[in-house]
Image (cartoon, rainbow, N blue to C red; front, side):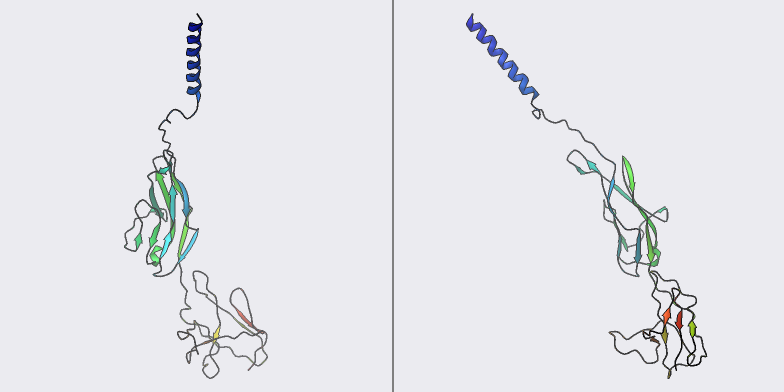
Length: 231
């Protein structure tokens, strides 16, 4: 009778052990669950880019879409719009790697200016970047050259206006120039000056920059003021 009881007690102990083992977490293999996510942006260009002729620039667009089965990169599609229309690369100057969004313009041209936006897509959604305004940088010219003659006496005040300032991107710094007395034929003159490569003396006959003078003042429009002139 006692042997039978021992066998029953042993069987119950084995059953309890099996039940406890069944409750231990991590003993069963995980179910193969794959959760794809919509794309998200990880990097993009700033709101404003100023380009220069024949100088390389980039429009950055990087995105990610996780697949939780191993967190591998899910397949993404990168598209660009320029001025609201889908952008088609039709020049050897523009390069975009496969499965990537960044555009590289190897030699910038004026036609590349515009408002760009990148779209990152997969089967679950689309992410879009902020707009990037690409401006073509240049310095405007005073055309035709403006030459004005002013007759003043020693000690007179003088106001010289900087009219019809040309548009430049980014805004250019204004500079007044003059011709020395022995070269001056038509009074004060303003224009773009050039200097010899590598510095050195200015070329003979070219306008020279107005030296710093405590008497001279300038306003935000570029006008120059002399409280009094001297011979």
